[in-house]
Amino acid sequence: MTARLFICLLIAAASLAAQPKTVRIGVLSLFEPRELTLRASQAGPLRLAGGSTIEGQRVAQLSANGDSVLISIAGHALETDRISTAGSFELTVPGKLTRQYNGALEITAHAGALQGVVTMDLETAVASAVAGEAALDGPQQGLLAQAVASRSYLASGRRHDEFDFCDTTHCQYLTDALDERARSAAAETAGTLLWYNGKPFEALFTRSCDGRTRTPQQVGLQGSAAYQSAECPICARAPKSWTRTHPLAEVAALIREHSEQARLDVVRRLGLEAIPSNMYEATASGDTATFTGAGEGHGIGLCQRGAAGLARQGASWRDILHRYFPAVLIR
Ligand SMILES: [Zn+2]
Ligand SMILES: [Zn+2]
Image 1 (tube, helix red, strand yellow):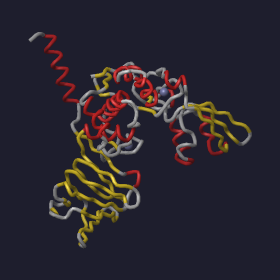
Image 2 (tube, rainbow, N blue to C red):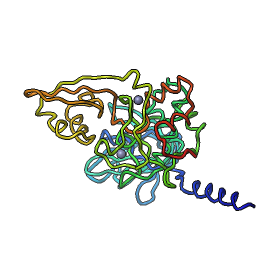
Image 3 (cartoon, rainbow, N blue to C red):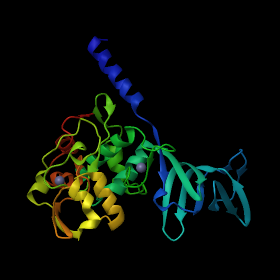
Image 4 (cartoon, rainbow, N blue to C red):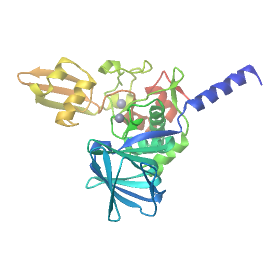
């Protein structure tokens, strides 16, 4: 074996070791559900804290009682610290939505809200992120670029104490991984990550931009030095422009500082469409403020609209990732 080959093998082994096989996703946390319906027809037995199991019964109504989980199953009620199962199952937030999962489920309760954590295969999570984050009717190479960016993000480390990532836009929006295009985008790029300084890169993405992406530092966030402001030819040619006028008192912070944190504080109060992106000019006049901007989202990293447009023009998923993340390695 040559020294060079040996080093290559060492690097390959190190990168394989660095990739997590599973991720722990906090699910449905956006709803802070007090009640959930668990349908576990293709899963193992339901296990309770302390080790007892319930065989045969596949539908359970769960509700939170302080820090305990109340289980109502076939007319019987039980109280436990934790319920778990593994396999294919479905969780319903009554009146809101039903979602299907594949993995190991654990449900606990905290201060009257149920918290589900699903430990799932990394590639299942990647397909769920592509289904949640990308326009699935878009071109294939754009979906492949999204799959690699989402996988890198999920491999880059955890963002929560009790689980690795949540399924809201705080981390990545995840939906069912059943969509065939989302699954094939994950499968075709399986194992490929973006790397910076020997670690999986925390690749962020934005719905669209104003013709140039931002670095985290440009919008007042901390982030990897690997980010560069990249030209986005798709949005430069035809930006998604917007104008909003708000009472000055509601948005005074955005006149003082142009930060993503200040924008998020405003959209939490006034709705996501109040200030659609971080790419704007603001002018105050009397007691109103007018914002003229373009794009949707924080503007950092992969521009999803740009990625789809470049793919339509014939760019490969590697070309797309090189454009928006010029300093990272694709491997
Ligand atoms: Zn999160
Ligand atoms: Zn763009």
